[in-house]
Amino acid sequence: MSQTTTQTATTEVNNGVNVEALLGAREALDAAPEAAQFKWRTTCEWVNGTHSRSTISSFFGLGAEQSRDRTFSVESDHPEVFAAEDNAATPVEIVLSGLASCLTAGVAAVGQHRGIQLHSVKATVEGDMDIQGILGIDDEVRNGFGTIRVHFEIDADATDDEIKALVAQSQKRSAVFDIITNPTNVVVTAN
Amino acid sequence: MKRTTTVIIGAGQSGLAFSKQLADRSIDHVLIERGEVANSWRKERWDSLRLLTPNWQSRLPAYAYDGNDPDGYMNMAEVIRFLQGYADFTGAPVETDTNVIAVRASDGGYVVTTDRGVWRCTSVVLATGACNVATVPKTARNLPDNIKSITPMDYRGPDQLDDGGVMVVGASATGVQLAREIQASGRQVTLSVGEHVRVPRLYRGRDIKWWMDTTGMMDLRYDEVDDIRRARRLPSLQLVGTPEHITLDLNALRGAGAGIVGRLAGLGNTKVQFSGSLANQCALADLKMNRLLDTIDEWITANGMERDFGAGYRFAATRLDPEPCLALDLADRGIKTVLWATGYRPDYSWLEVPVFDRKGRVRHDGGVVDAPGMYLMGLPFLRRRKSSFIDGVGDDARDLADHLCTRLHSAAA
Ligand SMILES: Cc1cc2nc3c(=O)[nH]c(=O)nc-3n(C[C@H](O)[C@H](O)[C@H](O)COP(=O)(O)OP(=O)(O)OC[C@H]3O[C@@H](n4cnc5c(N)ncnc54)[C@H](O)[C@@H]3O)c2cc1C
Image (cartoon, chains in turn yellow, brown):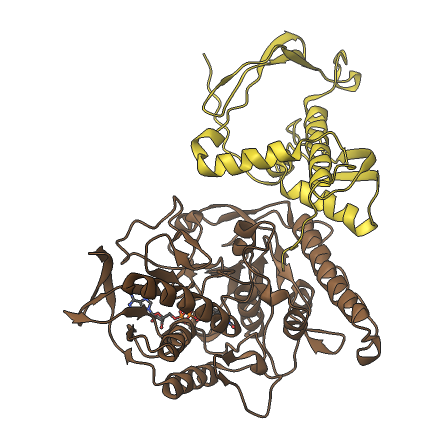
């Protein structure tokens, strides 16, 4: 009882996602799973106080180093209520925007695949955090988020349920959603 | 060495249906079965199990249920009697208590080695079942010794479990059925829920299996599906066969007192973590159920049959805890047993022919295996959505027997 006839992209629908290329890649990687092994990277340098700057450029994938023409930069700091300079968003806000961007990209891609034309997509994300955890006040309080709520406002040529299904499918296929909802092995070394 | 044209391995419904097709075509064959006819139903099912397909849907080539309760669901004794009856009716040449230990290619045919002799044949049918082994996630190894681990293959009934709580992992047909009976036995159940397929038992006065059959969904072919790999991996429907025709979804289990948690994400000693994706898994299942019901409604409208069935309706969304449980300590919760209802897989450890893909699955095109004269039966969506069901093996056996026959004649020509 899966959807038996998923609509494939018709020419009129254009969310700017090349679904044919993605499906082609899926086909190719199924035959050559080694090429599906990717490594994503970032380098972060301390600036001053809680202010830091990450640069992002190369990654590994399709069996080779992949370089880009550009290097991206993401800065982070803490706000004044933490006695910091507020030069940039906090790391946790960047995590939330990572989640929102990942889900939004998924909405566009799944929409394209299902032949749903999008007009606008806006995700509003809010994460609850009890900072007694990070401040070490209460050991029973975790450092990270309690609950994260994402709300999508989507204008598209689709029914309400089709839009809900888009959003659900994008969560199902989202890397950041998985990263946040499931444990990950993190290995940290120094020098 | 004994000779025959075709060796069919396994005398469940798949092997028996194939045997009937070969007999109808006068093709010399033998069925080799490690136990008795319907061995899986005799040896590998829990005591209370009833089919989740209604009696009328127990249909095999030239043979069908003809009792007076077409809408009921067979218990195991009845399934065994039904299949044994079919074997008797067709006069299937079954060699019972014979275990196949190796199948090898040889001289354009196959040599089938059993613990009771060796057979030479030109074609071989793998009808050994899709559910030979219970699949258990690797993390199960991290469970401490004082907590029992059990699979549905070994489970017979709640009395066999220690007193105390039970964590059931997996919420497809097996998981929800066992969660229900264990909770009813007075043991607190915690049900870990990943991807699942929710359906009501009855809709607009008919069994959901009747709708899926009548609207043609079960006949959908493997080469008509958008994504066959995904279709073959789809979990079983959350269904149970009870005389009361109850719907067994997460809301029903919650109502019975079971705790509902997300997909098992981590297990270290007695500490267990669950994924935060439960709300989405439930949303996906609710939306998919509604699409199925939409399809049924559309079919009724398209056929002008609104008057024959009551009006359409929808079911309550899956209820969620406002603060879902993301981690627990098995010891603190008094959980003494973990039951892995995390699926089944076939066992081809005896198949010494290079027909496997990198995940150990047999390479085939709708049951025609990637080795001349070899056929596969009974796997999910092998040729049709109904392929793994009692009601589905007839059509597949006919198609594949046709293929086998054509090949045989072209070889002879
Ligand atoms: C818990 C459960 C409930 C199910 N409920 C339903 C239902 O309600 N309705 C429905 O239509 N379907 C149901 N199914 C699906 C399906 O009908 C069964 O799995 C059924 O047993 C499949 O029939 P089969 O003939 O393909 O395989 P099996 O019945 O498994 O038959 C394979 C036979 O091969 C034999 N065998 C295996 N290996 C060897 C070997 N090496 N040598 C010799 N013999 C061997 C086995 O002993 C067995 O008898 C259910 C499945 C399960 C697991």
